[in-house]
Image (cartoon, rainbow, N blue to C red; front, side, top):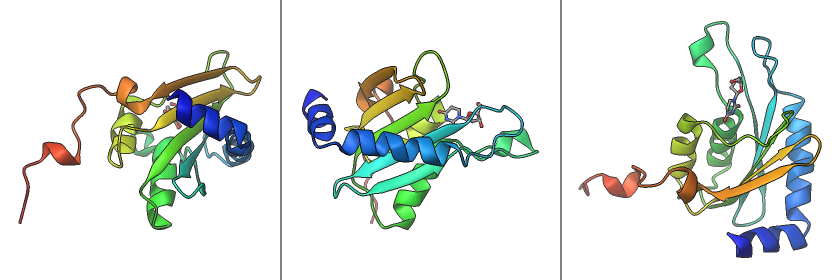
Length: 144
Ligand code: THU
């Protein structure tokens, strides 16, 4: 975790990703909760994939920011991720919800999760810590 964190931090990539997450957070569609979330996935080529939450009048169809970022990365043809950066306007940094942890885990749990608040508080964890003993692609029997 520290190695990835330090590399991303020292290269300036982490702060760039936070800036992009702040920007995409402003585009969140959250008329029901008013809770805007921005997320950026940093892939292994150091490209950014953005996501924001998109709510729906049929509340249960709401798409979280992290899952939107997974969709964007996939559409860009990228599946190998180094980190997921999340920005929220909360006192304490927020970690991805359970559903997002599961979706993020599809491309590997060796993913650094960095959550920042607007005032700069930060919390980091590996996805493998946030979703221990996870069910993933290798849990399924081999096919074919
Ligand atoms: N939300 C996210 O975008 N990510 C999370 O990990 C937790 C929750 C969104 C969903 C909803 O639009 C709003 O935050 C309140 O739950």
